[in-house]
Length: 186
Image (cartoon, rainbow, N blue to C red; front, top):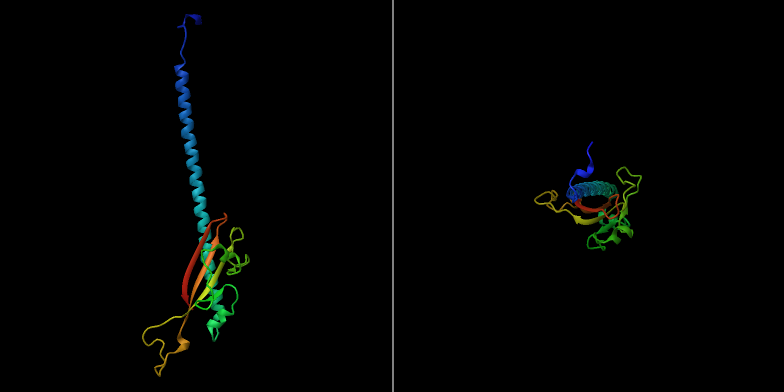
C-alpha cells in the first residue's frame, strides 16, 4: 500500500478553480437559454392575445353592419333614422363624432357594447370588451346614368347610404386593444 505522504507536498487548487469557472459558464448558458425561452413564450402569448382582439373587432364590424342594415331597412329618411338611433349612431356634420383614440369614447356610452350572449361575438374573457359605433356619411354618388330616371332627373331612391363603422376590442390581457374601421354602402 502506498503512503500518501510520498506525493508532492502541496497542490495549488488549479483544477478546482478551472472546474468552478466551467460550472459558472455552464450556469450562465443555462440561464440565458431560460430567459430566451420565456421571452419567446411571452411574445407568442402577446401575439395570440392581439389576434384574439383582432378577430373580436372584425366580428364587431360585421355585427355593426348587420345592425345598421336592420335599422335602415324600409326607412324613408335614413339620416333621421340614424339621428334618432341613440348612442352609438352619428351623422357626419350633424353630430359630434367621437374621437376613436380616446378611451372615454368606448366607455362613456358613445359606443354600443356587444353583450356576451351574442354569437362572436363577445368573448367574456376579453378584458376591455367589444364595442362599435356607426357614422352615417351621406349618400354614395354614382357616375353616368346610374342615378337618372327616365325623365333625366336624379333618382333619389337609387342612392345608397354610406356608413363608416368603427369597432374596438381588447384581448384577455388589459391594455391589448385593436381598433378597426371600414366604410360600406348598404
